[in-house]
Image (cartoon, rainbow, N blue to C red; front, side, top):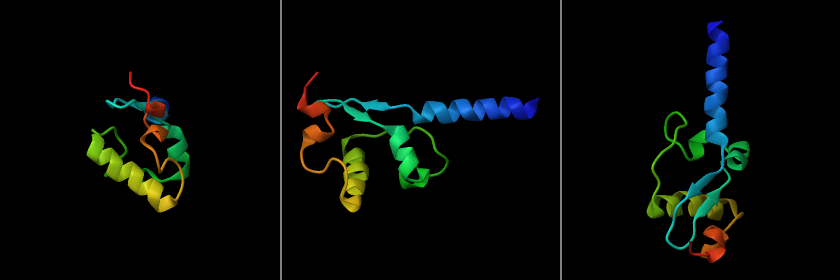
Length: 90
């Protein structure tokens, strides 16, 4: 019975972590597809220690996200609007 409860808790935790994330930004929110990235890279690419939510600001996001996209040569690379809600201010 305890194993079932632990399995359900773990599944719920993983599911909640896999949801899309919206990062608020003055020049348009960033819609981050977490589950897509989880399927491509190990958690340790972004998370230090066990996977968990962490605070991210402009400097951290640009270093982490743009750094990875440049390294991989894929995804948004050129214009702010590629990440920031197509440049729309909300």
